[in-house]
Length: 274
Ligand code: HEM
Ligand SMILES: N[C@@H](CC(=O)c1ccccc1NC=O)C(=O)O
Image 1 (cartoon, rainbow, N blue to C red):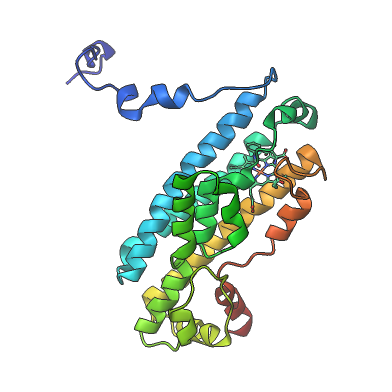
Image 2: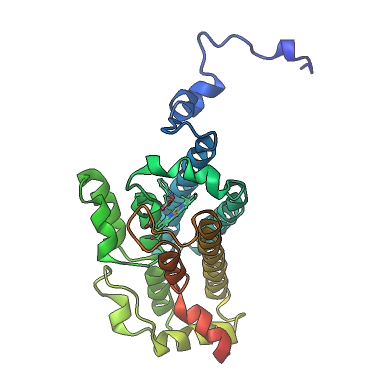
């Protein structure tokens, strides 16, 4: 045992090093700016780090959905809490991107062509796993069969909320049959009976403690996701104003409409009716 750096292992000619393990050659050689603009490095790294966090989110969300489906709530809570913390991290990441001014972004934007975050397949999988289903959103991935399969898998599977409602039914709460077995590609439709079931949980938390905790984990998650959407719109407005998006939508008008999405409607409504 020693505190001297000279005593650390220094020869990695035969052993796996930090960079080997983390595949840093692949990651750190993946920043290829197309424009002469200084700020493109920020733009690329902001997106790449977001995609890495989304990869972890999908890893956690997929496992959390399976855990809920298997009545294993303790591990699901831990994974959902992690997803919410990742979203918070992504909310704060907007502060870094917001240091980019409109003229700085104008130097990069012509080089982006028709590419846009709208085409992020991992983001679309997150939305689908959280229950925001839309057939149109599969289309940008049709040109790439492997990716389309991944997005379609998320599209066709029960969402986190679908599995939560199936769990409530297994616990004896009244959930309508058409919420328990349905075409999972269809957008979720809120129901008074489902709200009544959640109200029972929230009126007697001590009787349904883990379902109550699940309800609050879902609330945390949607709360953090709403903040992410909001920071996206405000950051976009401060950088490009009301210009149309490179992806072809109205831009800020489209992103504002996305602020109206409610993922777990009865969990929010019950607060008024409790
Ligand atoms: C200068 C920075 C940014 C600008 C100006 C911007 C602008 C836009 C616009 C205008 C759209 C609407 C689609 C379109 O027509 O293009 C959009 C969508 C999107 N952007 Fe960004 N964005 C920026 C940064 C980011 C970052 C850092 C991420 C993180 C990954 C991101 C992820 C997305 C996603 C996922 C969508 C699709 C949203 C949805 O369908 O609900 N954007 N963005
Ligand atoms: N939609 C943006 C372009 C954009 O932001 C973008 C382009 C390529 C890769 C990622 C992007 N980020 C998120 O939409 C724009 O209209 O300027």
